[in-house]
Length: 99
Image 1: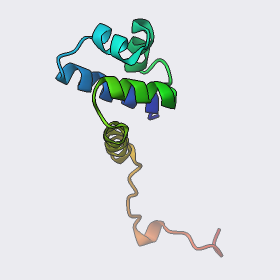
Image 2: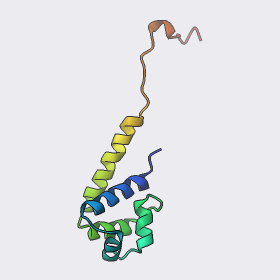
Image 3: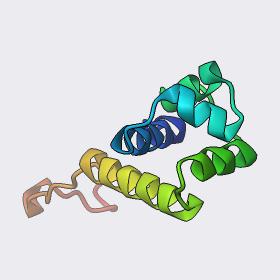
Image 4: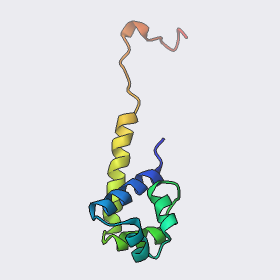
């Protein structure tokens, strides 16, 4: 099952690490406790829209960019986990009248 909070946390962590910033730096800039930001990044807490906007602001990232990355990750996961339909041979099909 895809958990949006995990995908969001992964994107936020990757962005922070790409910038070479620590949790402490981003939590201070976002006015979010260090522990709470850590829980959000680990996908343990759901970030409110206000909190997410604050974190994105601290990372100097548009919210739309972060959500776009999350959307791409969810789409990739869905594609990998989608059930595959296999064609059945005609002899395996049963008509409604025969059932």
